[in-house]
Image (cartoon, rainbow, N blue to C red; front, side, top):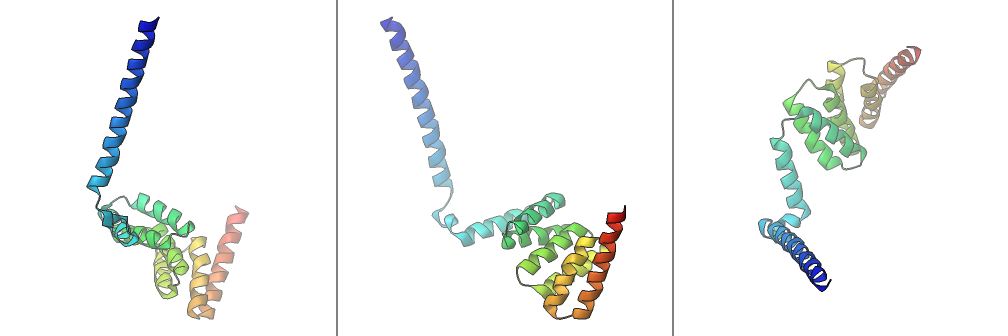
Length: 162
């Protein structure tokens, strides 16, 4: 009975020691391989931008950009969406989300350019017109805002009839 307890104790001690050793090794590896300066927000943003610059998956970039924009992480969203539009200039969704992100970043002129590109790629996408209304209003072009609003209303009424 004492021998069984002793064996159980030794096995438990070996397992616990192994777990502690592995965890310590992992933490030390993490600390030693990352310079302390990488903790700063600016360096983290640079590292993220570099990772995105190397990415070639347009759908992932667009989806991630949209998610970040919705989550008010506009700077990161812009990095993703600009890369997506560079890789695939005819990706309507990337242009729409880029325009949306630029509006959230208080860049209405840039948003207008992005949304106009999306409009040229797909002139019947209601979401494009929804954001074009805002972009035109923010740039002071009320006539174009009204036209975009009319197109949005027309397209969304057509969707409801189907």
